[in-house]
Image (cartoon, rainbow, N blue to C red; front, top):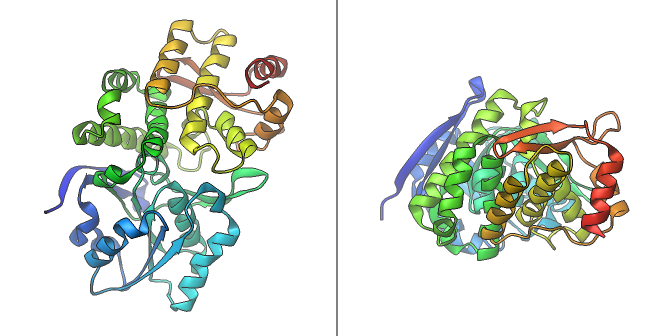
Length: 363
C-alpha cells in the first residue's frame, strides 16, 4: 500500500527550520525521507523492541545508500553515557564522515540519544527523527532537546540540537502497548493545559477514540500537539523563557522517575501524576478552582494514567526536585496553573507551603 501524508507543519527556526510530516506508512516512503539525507552514509539507531518491527522496512526505503544500524537495549534505564558510546563505536567502526546522517527509529529514549550523538559526533552531523511512540511523536522528537540521564538527575547531560525533519508514521502506534499509548497521552493533555483550552475540551470528548487508536483522532491530536509545541519552540528555542511551560508536571514527574528508579514508572505516567500535583498545588495557592482541578484529574485518569505520586516521602521528594534544570540561583521554579490553558513558570510560592503539600501527598 502507498503512503498517505495526512498533515505537514514546520518548526520555524530560520535557516534551521524543519518540517514535521504526519501520515500512514511513511516509514516506507523513501521519497519523503531521502531529501533530508545529504550523502550516502546513514546510521539507523533503534532498539531491541522497535528494530524487529520496522528496521528492515526503513532500510528498504533507503536502498541504494550505505545503511548501517545500531540496536540499543530498550528502556529508560539504558539512557546513559555508557550506552550512548555504542552509537559512536558503530559510527567510527564504519568510518562515517561529517556528511553522514543519523536516523532515530524508536521512542523518546532512542530519539534523545541519537540526537545527542549527532550533536557530538565530529562536532555535529545531520539527524532525522522517525518516532514510533505517541510520546515521542508529540513531544520529544520536536524541539531539539537531546541527552542522557545521570543517576542523580534526569536529562542533566545533553544539548539543544535540531533534526533535519520529523517523520511521524501513525501506523507504528498499532504495535504500541496500551501502557505506552497512555504514557504518550500525558504529553498530549499537557498542551491543552498549557495554552490550548479548546484542545483540552476536545480531548475530554475524544479520549476514548484516542485509546481505541482511531486514525483520524490520533492524527488530529498529534498535529495539534506538534503545532502547539512548534509555536513555543520557534519563540524560545533554548528555554530562556516561555519554552519552560512545556515542563508542566515534569519537575514533580522527574522526581518520581528518579526516586523510583528509571523505567519503573514510564515518563508519561510520572508526568500524568505530576500534572495532577501541579494542579492541586495551584489550587492550594488559590490560583485554580476545584472544578478545574477535578477536570484535570478526570482527563488524566481517562487516559489510563496515575493521578497520585508514589509514597517517596516529602524530604526525598524535595531533594529530587532540587536537582532540576529549572532551578535558578538556588530557587526551585515550577510550572503552575491559573486555570486550564493558563500556565506560568514561577518561583513565587512559599517553600513551607510546598513542603506541607508534599508531606500530605507523598508520605
